[in-house]
Image 1: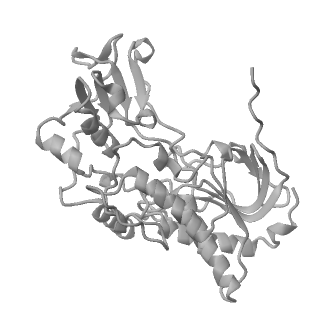
Image 2: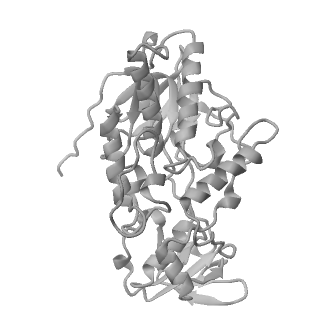
Image 3: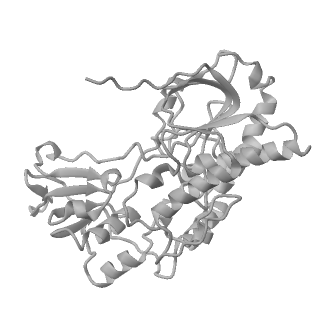
Length: 393
């Protein structure tokens, strides 16, 4: 057996700010850190923190490089940009593809010379005896005053547990495993999930699969056909500004705004009567799925479009308090909403509404990234009482 090459383990490295995640959220944080350094070099804005970005992927693009081949954005390129650099125009039909986003994110890194290290797997983050954090990776340890978590959720797919799943003879696939419809040619497929991914994948499968059964927990709710991601982002922002803060100043969820954007393929399938949802089933049979009323359906593949959970397993050593409202996410403050309630210098960026309105989107992550870097991260560095460069491994 040929042994696998062992990743090179580097000596402990010290920075002021360590960003974990090199997708859109990590790059947005990197932009504001870069701008801080640029301003400091020009003699304005105070000292600039040193920083690095760790990415688990082997190449730029974040989760976008793993999506299915026909995915398109909800909005035109001009309304799908990170701070500082507008996404180049898309010359294809409809809105930009996932591949276009991957190219854009790579160009974004290059434009600002962001210090992205890849591929790096983060194993654990723990407190440093002198303050700050030790981040242990497959390539060594990093020491920092601040950790900005921007890992997203792609690596933590969620699949509900239903009776009979272990006896089902067919295949079960999550969104993360769906790349092209040709793989499912001639198959009887049940697509589970009433969000945008479920609608888009169900529509995408129609030309190839023998049958497509779309299953949702509640009837699908489409946004008006003339509404795209631009309006959805504006609506989410307005919701948070007007109603989305509780008495403690925390940003509330805007899940009620999570309607389906009728991109062309979805709209065509819906209007043709080929995209009609059935209620959620209650369990599996050996050959398919069943409902409580006795109905059953033979299925070859169940495709779960049931979302994700934040990829934060590396923070287990810190024992962070969980948010009582969301349960599966760490508790944060309201000023800004990305800051950990438990740990000074610990931030969460780009995970969804609980850390900023529409913060899991390209256009929406810029504002919380700016707040995290310009206000919270820099404030944390100034109040730490010592520069991280004095911290030893």
